[in-house]
Image 1 (tube, rainbow, N blue to C red):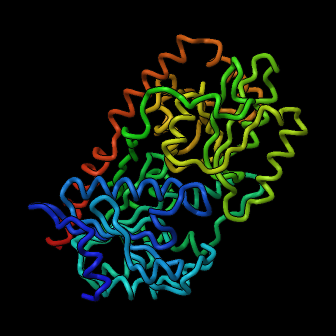
Image 2: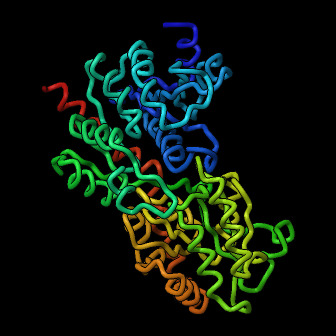
Length: 423
């Protein structure tokens, strides 16, 4: 063990009796990265929460990511509520475009294989799988793969201005899920795509829906209105639109829907998040669109928010809008529901797993702004409906905590490890 390994070992909980030693792989992004900036999004939230929950359940959790700064490389690791995040050298210790990271997967795999042997490897995203599969083979342990976004889904639901995924990723995903001991997906839509598009047997795919942190996302008071921009202090209240600013998320549709509402009934629209990689022009176009439609004063861009601040804004909102072209799951939807704020979402892919139509929110089939304005108007004009959806969302949030997710994952891991040992 190196000095760095020794210091990192002190950050993790040793497995309790019956617990597993788990290696979770996230090559392209650290779970500790600030969500909403660059490539950091729902998968980062997922890894951070799952890692901590698995550690609470008595498992040893080591999360491996690529060092993208000299400081991370020198530090070697960081603690994460009983788990440890390890920074491995693979390529330059600086940010690298995600499209170029596959070239560094062999270096990452070699560095990973020199670490202590776990009982099981779980790779998150296809780039991680390139390294995680190789290291699992060296260690002689089972490899579990999660894609988090499936290239075939993205290409089928491509938003205008987005770039389709290339043949390298499509081929990589197909090979990885075809060879993995088990594929874990976060929604039924993701499972169906992997079975249909990549030919994986359904019994080799497990669906484990993500969860929510009840300590952050829960019912309660909203933000202090006096501390918010004047646009949010209006009788109609405000709507939330959360996520990276990129065509996939559909912020443009939310703005167009807002413009369909009469000024007297129009809530403000709070847009949080930063431009996704390569989408600075889209972010500028959103402001230009709001100005052209005459709703510039009604749309408030707040940038990236800390989770606690975001939860306050959600609790004070009349609804959260999710007009995404596709979502693997849609963590924002269950976080909003857990706060008691109904969700109005596109009736597509993973959002059908995170929004229970007419129970925690409303699913909208059309992408016409008028259809979205109609759903918003209905929710604002029917207090009984809003109250029923709020209650349904809170109940769902209590059933889907990260501890529930960790228990389901641990059961899957144990079964896979046992199968591998027998083989």
